[in-house]
Length: 311
Ligand SMILES: [Zn+2]
Image 1 (tube, rainbow, N blue to C red):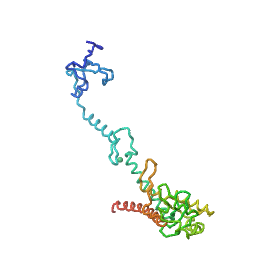
Image 2: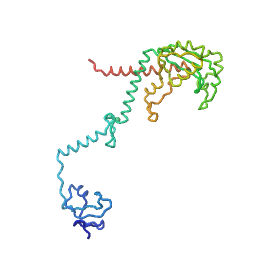
Image 3: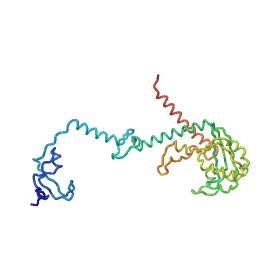
Image 4: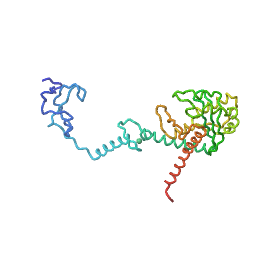
């Protein structure tokens, strides 16, 4: 029989009874004694191509672990589990190397961020309403190279500062089909005939200037309405409205609703709730959205007050 360093090399078949492997010994509660034989084996656990065999009668009984060892092992296990468990929701990550955001899991972290962002935007909106902003809304001849056909401005209390139809320079655009096959008239119901006797932008400009000048102007989708309004004003050679600043209620409301899009890396825009596609109706709906956001702040404060212990 072949030998390596005095240890016989055996084959699987027949198995050199009564020899056993290290793991078989370990399961029985023994540490291995001297090496008694090897079996050539391409995938041995030691990686050297030999399966090591021992005599079970020569196995050394392992000492049972001390209480200290048992306690230390339990603590290690508990610490390891704690390191990958979210303290907020109890979610357990399968892998140890994952670092939790501030100790909480990713989902909870997004929850905290959304709550903080919602609170922050509610505070901003409450201040803007308190500061006496105005709300502007327009209906237009379309999406591209468009003109306003209806403009409404409310103050922060809902009082109507301005509300008028406007006769556009290019009314034929109202019936041009857009990307989805519908015309501007399909959306807001205003036709070129409806506007035949309406005042021009030049005629309404002084009253609109009066409503907007020096104000914080809030618009649902500012990025669409404001450039359009500026282009129209310039086309009519009218000077700047000189508003104090402008803000987008749509971006505020997106943050308030907290529907995060990882694709866009921003909060999803929400359609204006309660809008009716008239300038005045949409301006009122925008004011309602602002009020809803600001009111959430009061609810929160009240909850806090309720939670205070009676003294
Ligand atoms: Zn969590």
